[in-house]
Length: 117
Image (cartoon, rainbow, N blue to C red; front, side, top):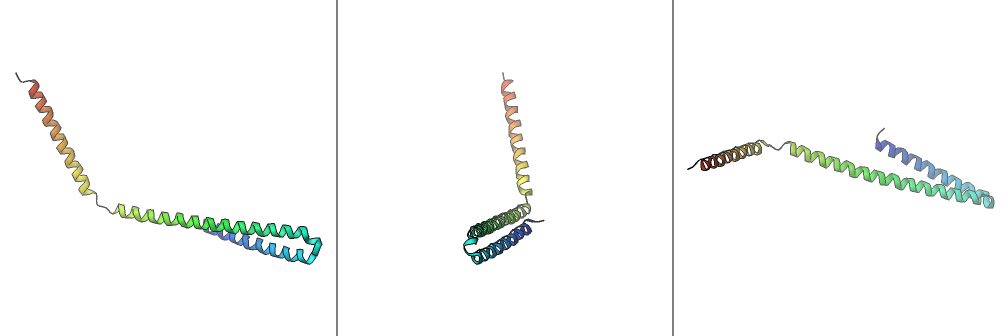
């Protein structure tokens, strides 16, 4: 079951809860004074329905942000994957060769200096 389906289920429960709260409020009004406690419960159920709806909207927005971020990341990775790194690798290899050659010349010069009379 995917997340979007779960949020759809939350929306469905929210609508049903809101409908139950409305029916409870109607029945409480019909009962008059005897339905006062039931009226309070109906209000609480309505508040719960609103909180659930707000939560579902918040989750939906956050999932949208995550999806957007994943899409942007995928596009960036795709772009990076198409970059030709062969020139950079060749330059690095050439630089390593030059540093190695310089190091060898310095060592050779030091050895010569040590063996000079």
